[in-house]
Image 1 (cartoon, rainbow, N blue to C red):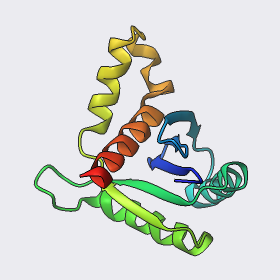
Image 2: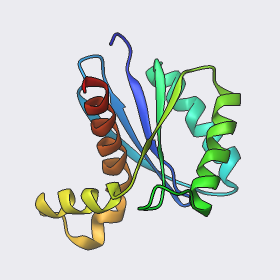
Image 3: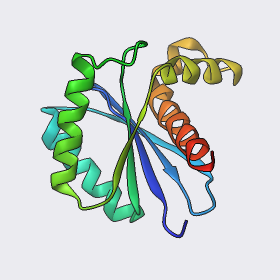
Length: 140
């Protein structure tokens, strides 16, 4: 892996971002706090991330229900993914994000972070977990 890829945990209020470098080290980046209409905000920040990190690809968590069926949130994320494909020609893959937020809260708790501060980091830690799952899937 020469160039990094970026992983995203998309939410209507917060967007978690993680960077996976060429040696597969995963780093959570600052959570993006959505202000204003989602798509213009997201496009501006996505393009900034692309310019900064020059990734070779993108990974987006797809929020499926426990039974594997799509939800209203799934359809919203799929709409955003379709927009992302229009904004960039980079390869884009998805991975089921089921329980990543739960695991992210557990990790933050294990680190001793007070619960009231979790929302500052939970989405980017969830993006990091998505990247970990994706890398494991590639190795399998």
